[in-house]
Image 1 (cartoon, rainbow, N blue to C red):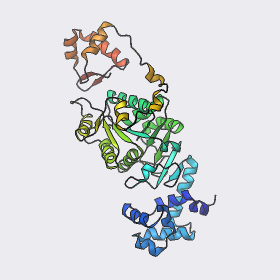
Image 2 (image 1 turned 180 degrees about the vertical axis):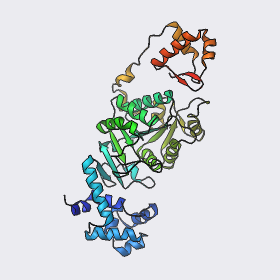
Image 3 (image 1 turned 120 degrees about the horizontal axis):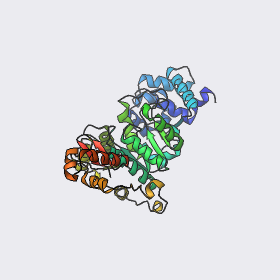
Image 4 (image 1 turned 180 degrees about the horizontal axis):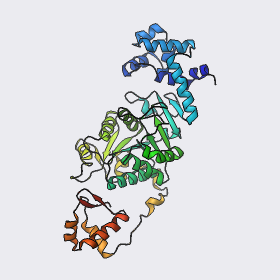
Length: 380
C-alpha cells in the first residue's frame, strides 16, 4: 500500500486524527455535534474547522492531508508510526474498528486509537479490572491470582496494567489457569514496562492482549499511568481493588471507574496493614466489600450460569493439601491474619525457638504462612 493510500484508509484517518494538535475533549464535542463521526473532521474545510475551535496547526495538518502533501511533519510522523507497527506486528484500532468496544467510546476523553499486540477480539469480551499495590503482600498476591483465575473461569476477562505487584499477579493467575488476560500499558508496545515483566508480557501477547493508546517508541512516564487507568476501568464492567495504600494509583482507577458508571469492589485486610487502608477507605465510601468471586458476579447482575457447569481449571478443582504434623498444625492455628512475633507464637504454642522456626519455614514453603513486618501471618 502506498503512503498516500494508507493515509486515506480508515486506519490512516484515525491515526492522523490522533495526531491532531490540541484536539481535546471540548473541540471533539463540537465536532461530534457537527459530524456523524469524529474522523469526518478531516473532510471539513478550513473555515468550518476554525468555527469549530480548531487551532492553526490542526487546520494546516488537515489541509495537508486533504491535498496529499505527505511531507508535512505530522503526516511523516504518522507514516513512521505505520512502519513501526508493521515491523512489530502491532494492530491499530480506531473507534470505527470492529474490535473497538462500544463502552470505551463513551468514556470521558476516549482514546481515538488503540495499539494492540495479541488477540484484539478480546476487547469485546466482558472484563473485570483487577488492580492494586505494587508493594503487595504475599496474601494480596495470592488474592489477585485466585480472583483472576476464578473470575476468568466464570466468564470475565481479567484486565490490569502489567505493573509490579497485584497487576502482575492478576495476569499470571488468569494465564496459569488457562485463560487469556488483557494488559493496558502506559507506553509504546515496543517499550514495554517494567522490564521485570517482559517475560509475562510475552505470555500475554501469546495468550491474550496488550493494548496502549501510545504509539511505538513512547517511553513510560509517570503522567501516562493515570491516563492508562481510565482505559482499564473503561474496558471493564467493574474494578476490583485487591490492596491499596491511601496514596495508591489504584484509588485513581477506582475513582475513574465510579465516574464512568462502573462498579467498584474492594477486598478488606488487616486494620494494621498500610496496603489495606485504601481498600477500607473505598468500602467506607460505598465500594462493595468482596470476600468471594460470587460477591462480584452477584453485584454485576448475573451469575454467569452458562459458565457454572464448565469444568474448573485444574488449579481450582482440588487445592494442594499439605501433610502437616501436629507441631505445624499448632503453629498454623496460632497464626492470625495480622503479624505475630516469634516470641508471641512461642508463648502460644509452647514450642522452643528452633522448633518454631522449623515449623514456620515449612508453612512458608507450603504457602500457608509468610513473614511480614512485625512477625509472621497466615496466608490461607
